[in-house]
Length: 394
Image: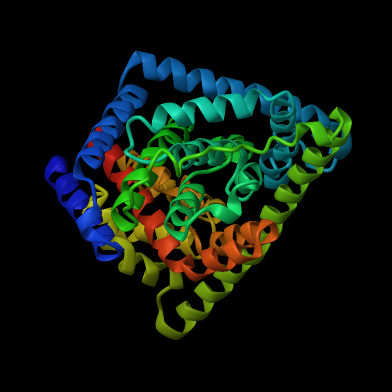
């Protein structure tokens, strides 16, 4: 039965992507089928084999060690603030972002990350039917983040046509940055975080190639990566990345305070007037999508509410909601919804990406702002597609 639902889900996702396609005649079927097969193989390897278990555990242990080191600095500054045995979200989940951001800066400074991003991107371009630029951008987005990635492309930003700009932005919104992966792993199972990051990359190519098909020639596909390390000393760079990490942590904290309080207030208001919470209403709206993702029908409303929460707020708020509802959900539903949540596909990301691009190139920033809703539409389909792929395997 799960295979029939998965096939139905894939047909609906591809159908919705075709509805939003700018040129249905240019859609290339062969690379799409090939990438879906790659997604299934990678998901099976990561979730259902000893090899995958070793990889997941190694990554989880690695981030666990990073969080331990981060906690040394956090304890030095904030030791004694928390009650004995307490685990405040801000201290344990958000502040480690500062240390991981510093680590990314070091790897960037010594040109280790640019090397990895460039060559993995070139390898991906051989299988996805897209250009080197798009492939590099997908890898880079998953490492440095959805806004920072455009800094690495600023030399050629003004020359990128709107069609390719859409694909670059869609990739950025469909992934997550390495600096907050550790935070995710404290909230949902690491195996689903890693799996989502890997298959979202291919999912972004699949959906973008349907919604926004085009052909790239070798002459058009020049990849110029701005590394920028030579402009700063090591300690200048380190200070900048540490402050950037702190800004990310504080921004997420502020958004959580605002959004969680707002949802609590709206839920209470709806419950008083209609006898049903706002999240439950959203749950009914998104329940059909939860069903085609393979969620058992008895749990689709709850799952749909969590999915909608992510779309209208952000993934952190939704992960908190998933944690609250976990006792009432099956392991299968938790796995499927967890994969759906691991991306930046929400309304606030439209402003973040458009703002980041506009800060580097005003004209291109306006281009991104114009296709903002279409960008979110595509990125949400990527999340649904990834969840469907995982539903076949678990």
